[in-house]
Amino acid sequence: MQTTLADVAREAGVSKMTASRALSGKGYASANAKAKVEAAADRLGYRPNPMVRSLMSGVRQRRVEQRGQLLWIDSYPSEDRTPWALLEMLEGAKIRADHLGYLLTLERLDGLVDCSQRALSRRWVNRGVSGVIVGPLLKSGTRLDLPWSDFAFSTLGRSLAEPLLHSAMFHYPHAMRRLLVEAAAGGAQRIGYAHLPELDARAEESALMVMEHYCLRAGIDPALACPSYDNWERENWRQWVKRFQPDLVIGDNVNICDWLRDAGFQIPEDLQFFTLSRRDRSDEIMGIRFPYRDLGSAAVDLVAAQVERNERGIPKRPKTLMLEGDWVSPHFG
Image (cartoon, rainbow, N blue to C red):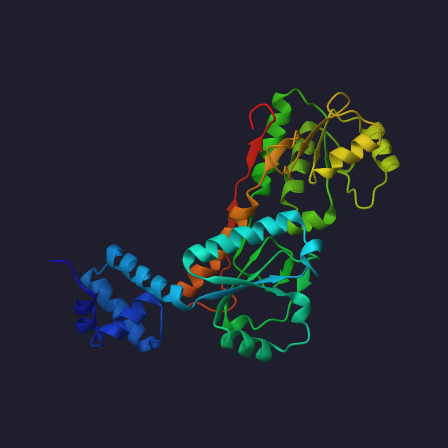
């Protein structure tokens, strides 16, 4: 006969509720009771029934559907100044939140700067907020003063410097490797990577590190092959191409293709161009298209899972969920 939770409680000399709390980590159980229950479970060989756990998760989710609310914190001053990619993430988050029974509302960061943690916590609790998603911030390295201990949190990318939260981000190392593989398959031998430091910081320099590793293995100077293009004019692009003489350029921004054309280069006659941020199927540029809506959805899942487990505050071991992108070519996309 299979050992039940009631058997464990009886063996440990505690109530069934206390045994449940001790084993699940949800709700309060004293350290002494927890030790007794865990020892009893080990002696009896108790393993929780996954079907029961799944059923109870469904019950808890139905409760959430009646009252759940999540916040999305946006640091951009208005919707017309918000990048298209972030709007896609927000749309994906709204769809996923609605599917899980949450109401997702937008909160502008500039409306929170004068509020204390206590005031914010009281305001959000009164509104029925259980979780908060910190969207990609206008400036990487930002630190926020929020009521971290009172709610479940997640974030997108690494624009938030502190604290470290559960986060969802794109798998930039895999994306860069795929671009390099496709470039080599097409015969490219001198590959350059134009990158913006601000975007590097959001991706923890992961794409840049993959590219620099490639350069070192190929005997190419990474400092020459991987220029930072912040505030570059057309003459800067001309000088770099003249010095490095790439046959293919990878850009972290699809606009770089237009800037190279503006500097007098024909794409792809003079230079091939791949991008880490391909937008849609109508775009003729080859590269990686990331699922921005899926990223927003993933951030909601991270928060909803914490709410379901009754977890709040800064996690002891933050998790990062990394989403793969798709290689898209005009010939096959």
